[in-house]
Image (cartoon, rainbow, N blue to C red):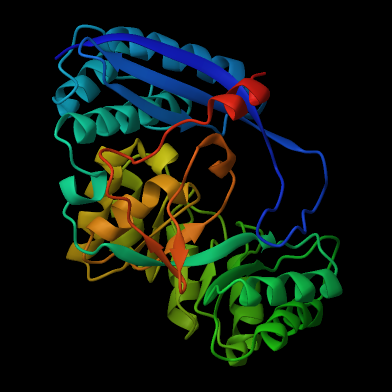
Amino acid sequence: MKISSYEVAILKVPEDDPLANMPEEAGRFRPVVMLRLRTDNGIEGIAVTFYGGKMTGSLKVAVEELSELTVGEDPLRIEKIVAKLRSGTGDSCGPGGIFTLALSAIDIALWDIKGKALEQPLWKLLGGHRDRVPTYASGSLRRGLTDDQAQRAAQILVQKGFREMKTQMALPGNPTPADEVRRVTVVREAIGPDIKLMCDINQRWRPEQAIDIGSRVEEVGLFWLEDVTTADDYQGLARVTAALNTPIAGGEYLYGIAPFRQMIEARSIDIVMVDIVRAGGVTQWMKIAGMAEAFNLPIVSHVMPEILVHLVAACPNGLTVEYMPWMLALYEETPVIDNGDLILPTTPGLGLKFDEKAIAAFRA
């Protein structure tokens, strides 16, 4: 079996909120790059990548150029292909940026091919630790909402059966610590004491702010505080982690595997969060998961639950899957939620199939 061809396209995916119908701004779109990687025996591996923003056209070209290097290769020899792609850029185009975003799409598609060729779902190929995994609602309780909107959205999520959900602080404007505390308290009051509540800061606080406000909200009972300050300020993150009882999560902004060693060795975080696109695909994500396990740390996913449910479920230290529905409209079916858990698919590979009508409608 050899890779024989590929197809790459830019899609504009609506940034709606299908979970609570409470988007910050109606009519926005997210540009993504779609990949189909085909073999000479008719197997097709699929993937998407993004974070290109205004450079999405450049990301598309990068995916095309790297995909061309895979033609003629055995898709089951994934590490060999990854090494060839790195070599093809002169070993000087990584670990961050467009190269890694493009590499990730190819790596994901290769694992999809491997699962289909071996007639096994990805989560079983990667370890198969469990066949269902907790998930949390994300993307509905955003900082741009009013308190009333956030409260209504939180109640809708509870009614839909979510036992875990994420909100945000670092509110717009120039909020006081009291404003920040008020928002997260409003959400907690709306959902009750038993729902696990996470809170994302998106790198918007200085370490001293994180310690100050984080200490004020500890009685709210957050499951974690996420990305409280600049992602590569490992020493600053370590100060926050040491000062607060609330667990600190981070890592989604890091590219490749090496920065995770620095973050983990500095004891910067309590919970390792890995973005599959920035990490370099399935192959690198699983290496980071093993690194986290060696330090007795849990690992969690960032966006793309339809793919990352496989990886979190495969790992003994997998904690929960972020149910961020950015890309779900691209597929005919995605993993179902039962009593707050995502159920792992039994179909081979990713268990996903592009919805051709949606792909046609979203083409840029």
